[in-house]
Image 1 (tube, rainbow, N blue to C red):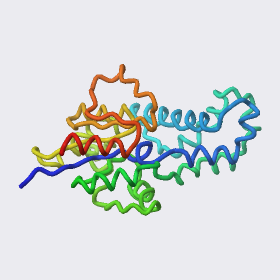
Image 2 (cartoon, helix red, strand yellow; image 1 turned 30 degrees about the horizontal axis):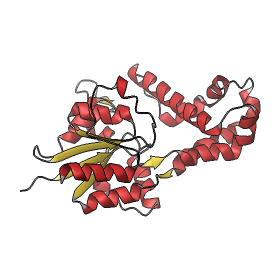
Image 3 (cartoon, one colour; image 1 turned 30 degrees about the vertical axis):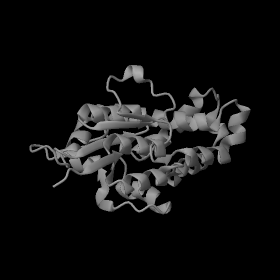
Image 4 (spheres, one colour; image 1 turned 90 degrees about the vertical axis):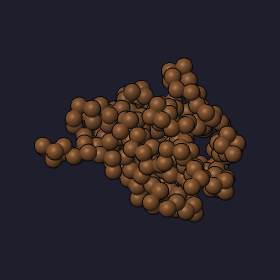
Length: 251
């Protein structure tokens, strides 16, 4: 049997843009933020990143807390850090919640559908590996009219192990090797096995685990390659360009 070609994608940030989230913040709080010399997109990015930081700090100290709860909790702190002295006067809790709801309305990036069509047309099986809820993440593709088989969506959580003594399930989250290596083992030794992402921390971790790597700068803009020791097989500025280069390297 001929070797198969598999490419695994990160979804949120890579295939899916955060623009709808940033736009929602701008619609609700934009004029008030601008009056404080705070850009809505920058605030949204900082808010999201602060929540992710707290999520992992709590996780690594053995205190798992749902991301959405953390996201809500750090909203006013993030406004403080943006230089707003009285953040609870700038936004109500209802407005905070409305801004946060924009995170569930994200849309596919320009070129994502074209990229997927190129890869599938060249005989690639497309997979998605996510730490998020599979139903929600798959919904981003379905709302855009791009069919993604549910069996090709993999949650890191399915690689979690249960402690035989305590019975406690240990969660698995990217970029732990425990999320990439089991994914790699799903494919035959002779198959092409690629991982693609717009986060350098994600794709370089996958390469460290054994995948070939394709990186798109559409999100990070600056790859900061000097802090990552793994080399990429493909570097691109757009998603269709990434597909073209992956196909060219394996045809």
